[in-house]
Image 1 (cartoon, rainbow, N blue to C red):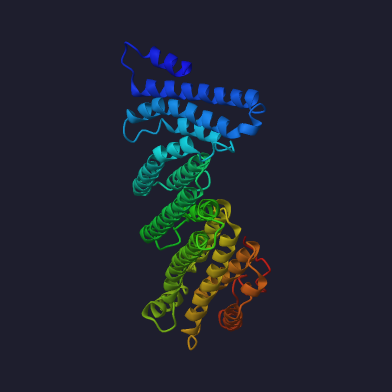
Image 2: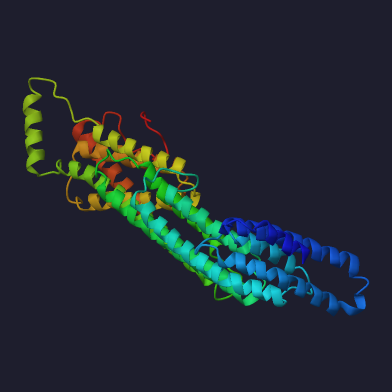
Length: 438
């Protein structure tokens, strides 16, 4: 009783704040634990045959302390978490003591703190949800560590909350499992929200960007891919549980991430295809029989009698090749997951070759203008070479559509060589060979 009276006497004659009262209670709990440990060390052997007496004495001792503890906790402000260190101090001592673990005082301690823990988790869940909403509204998508500012903040908060609850070492198994399950489900919901918001921002970013070869993959697009990479890694830690039903949380998030990445790759490839379509649209003006083609041929032939008329250059092909290489380099350098890059490049190459093949098929009955032929040869050869350098497999590079395109361009080249008297060094040699230009 001496230690309880001494602490109480310190507060006589002055107003004690809740914080000071809690500080005194924590200091008092340290003294209580020290006394109980000394009793165990000095008297356990003497009372070996009467261990019940030792347990009863300890519980009585803790009961006296409980009055001070209850009074201190009662005056703490609502939604204040400063008292959790007191729980951890007492619980860490009691849970390893065979006789006191889940004893009368220990259960009283749990009854006091269980509502606080639930309330804390409730407020943290609301706070994290709000931070996600606000964060994505003003997200710049600049790279921050493994993802974006909002995703990094989210994963840190979820991990910190789970670590805090885990470090409480809640002694009652059912409530402990309830907390773990709730936090895993919360993490699953939060990460799902992060994935969906990122997917929406990804599509919006592509919709606002240009549809010509001036388009360059921005850093933000790469950051969004990296958010998916990090979400997959974090979900393995934050959402997975060892029990059968709860493991679904992790598998569902994994499935959502995979499907979302597929959609993002499809959206980006669609953007690349639209840009190639814009190039082919320019070439369509040279189609045999069109007004532009007829006018161009007439003008060139008429003027060439008097002056040296410059032929259309390779700017269209060169700008497209530059666009492709810039995008490849950006994605390769900035996206953290090699598998995503492989899927993207495979789909990009295949879709592009299918588009060129379709464009040529639509002109099966037409002879290509020499300008069209030169541009297409340059694009197809460079595309084959560049994607091969990026690691696209030969089985993908030499797909059926590529062979169709290659054969058509080779045939058109032979015809043009006879008709036009040569292709000025541009030829559809084997596409794994490089031509004079890089």
